[in-house]
Length: 87
Image 1 (cartoon, rainbow, N blue to C red):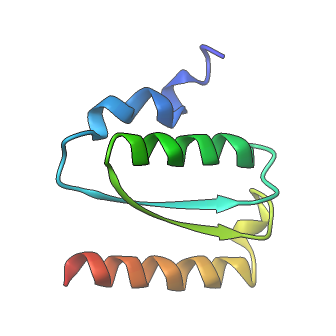
Image 2: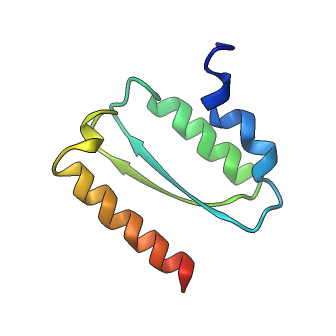
């Protein structure tokens, strides 16, 4: 567990609180690398800390998020979030 602590987003929650930023969380529902229940837990923690965030869930796994059609869906959603944030 300690080996993975540097990439565990929960370890950075305190740094996200009280900052003027918006986070977009992408989750793959069948991800075995970052399981769905841990992502849901992280999203709840963001809400509790009042960190501005949105989420997008895709019906795929960790690696399949990087191939067609999921990569296109994620890319389009990412562009939409960037446009919204910059407007």
